[in-house]
Image (cartoon, rainbow, N blue to C red; front, side, top):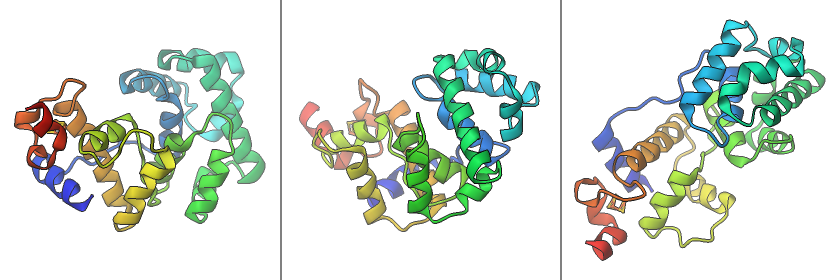
Length: 215
Ligand code: SF4
């Protein structure tokens, strides 16, 4: 894992991901990005900012229909509005309306609390923990699965938790590194390891069984 990280870091340089003004904005983005692309999320977040509603009390003050309208560009807006309001209700009931208070707890404890909430799966929970809470929780996504499968580190049936454990077990638990590694995997998969891969130019070509087999 470390070798892959170093190779990608040398090729792409520092990426510094997930720009946001607050941990809450990260959490909202992590919920809204489910089943859509980031451009659509940006439009929804811009709407929330314009309505001065990108904070727990702002979301809480909105009627469901108002929230749905503001986040409509992110798709599945009814489902996502419900998830956001349940998330905010949870914060007010248990953490005085503060995401920072929730995220200040021990990693495994906070992760379990997030996973218990409706509509928050492991990728969303880990994104909130890593990018919002600065906690060392590796984020696994479809790009991670594709890249590791082609490198034959995965064999196809591994669960989210098994893939996450590969990173958690083999790397130092440093949020900056987990942040950067995930960003590098996404960049690698958008640039080279696409659905139709561009193996000859890929920085991992000499360590990749897929390239050898298909080349
Ligand atoms: S060599 Fe090809 S298949 Fe292997 S990681 Fe690079 S782009 Fe993907």
